[in-house]
Image 1 (cartoon, each protein chain N blue to C red):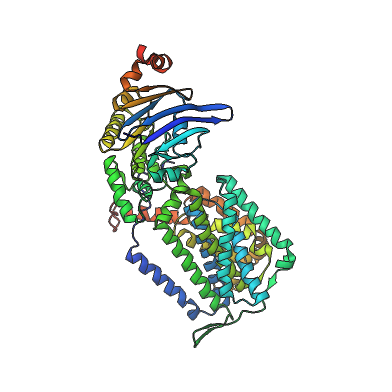
Image 2: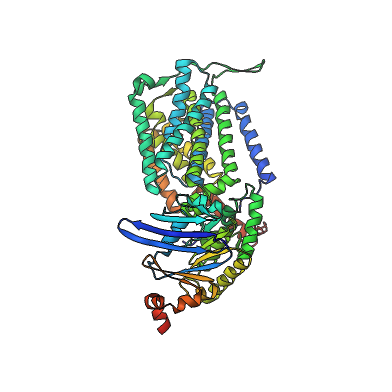
Amino acid sequence: MTAILEIKHVSKFFGGLSANSDVSFDVEPGSITGLIGPNGAGKTTLFNCITGYYPPSKGDILFKGERMNGRQPDQVCRLGMARTWQKVRPLAKMTVVDNVMVGALLRTHSLRVAREVAMERLEVVKLADKAGALAGGLPIGERKKLEVARVLATRPELLLLDEVMGGLNPAESEEIILLILELKRLGLTQVVIEHDMKAIMRMSDRIVVLNSGEKLAEGTPQEVAHDPEVVAAYLGEAVHA
Amino acid sequence: MRAPPVALRRPARGFSTPALLAYLTVIALLALVPQLTHKPSLLHLWIMVFLAISQGAAWNVIGGYTGQYSVGHAAYFGLGAYITMLLLEMHQVPPWYGLGLAMVGAVLLSVIIGAITFRLRGPYFVLASIAVAEIIRLAALDFRDFTRGAEGILLSGIPPLQLGAHLTIRFVGKQPFFYAALALAVLAVSSNWVVQHTKLGYYFQAIREDQDAAHSLGINPTLHKSIALAISAALTAAAGAIFGLYVRFIDPNIVFSLPDVSVQMVLICIIGGIGTILGPVLGAVVLVLLSETLRNPGWLVQVGVLGEDSTLVDFIEQRLSSAHVLVYGVLVVIVILFAPDGLLGVLRKGLDRLRRRPGASAAPRAAA
């Protein structure tokens, strides 16, 4: 099967600092790819390169075989690749349903259709009862869900989730894990950045490990967990703890 | 202060019939005003209010809904006035064509200004918008061959407008300008309604709330900011054109004025309520009454609010009229401190409190 997303030798430099250097991996359709690494490993930078916020300094990003380099974030989203933000970005003075409608309006001009799609997505993330509330007033757990509902409303084929579980309590994290697995069952391809090792091991079909901007390892959760380099560089402390 | 968990604003839905009827009734009643009164000072006040509503609603599209606080809208106001007046005086182009050309000119100017200023965000955008407008004001002062500089343009007359075989509109007195300004105000307020109830408005507001998030949801921020600015500029230019034709004299320091045009347009929205349909209407009424009273308190006597020998009129004339910018400043400080959502926000809170009071006759509003 051909990959839906191909990262080919991608490097990103900020002045003399290299945030990503020569990163390559493929994402298979319908799979969940975990992207892990210590703080500053370049995970979010890679997301920003993939979704058009930064042009990569070197290398190519192919989505469904099409080159993404130099495309703007809105074009990337229109083509079916959507992302969430590590630091949630609710449209604070708009209601929850209006937030999700903004996403849905990418595929329709009708507010009525957009509202229907938005309510469906809110049902999926179990936030429909808060539809009329202002997004700025939601607690963090619900903001994360809103972020997912809004991005789902753009009808993506590939979803890039940047630490959607960060700052959540175990019960909320479990809800998000089940949501991600449910989305996988529905056929959505996902790339997930997460710090919670247990969660990432449980969800991912494959895991890519970044360290200091370079790809350290790639494989199934078992392979990665037993890779001596990964253990030394990143999982070491966790294993001995 | 934490945001309330439940939206104060109901989510935008289709236009309710009662609201539409109320809107049409108000317009119809306003259209009757010149038949009921012929006091020039009163008609003057209405014209200034309508123009201020138009300007406020125009600014609201880019500032209120899209969140780009332009403090340089005098550029479009002045351009509208100059295009219309110059075409009429130099080339005898009737002002109703001139007004259309002024709107087109403003849209073109907005594309250029947008290309320069939309790279910047927040306070940097504000400063750039001021700078560009000031450059245009100074250019209008300096290019004397073209604009007559500080000498200004004095209108010698407006040709009558022949509509069909029987109706001829002569631009004498205040009545024709009353209707022109009313029509523009209706257009501008309606444009705000359209913005708020279409995809365009959702996109504008998404950009206002978080441009990067909007971008990631498939919105092209530069394109949509440019659309918002173009709508805003066209309406502002139309207001400038009608203003020029009405007062019959313009110079760069009047129509390109930073405090009297650019800042005033922002104040109308801040005082009334930014990003709402009724906010600019409310703000315009308050600000025009205030500024006209400070400039020429005599109208209070003419209308009969104050007696002939009122000491208040003397006090305002002698002490306050030259300090109107100071009075604005104090008003803005009060509004920002005590009514950050503008007067409309205060009214809405008051109404909500009345509704929630135990024993109040009105049933609590059903959840949206």
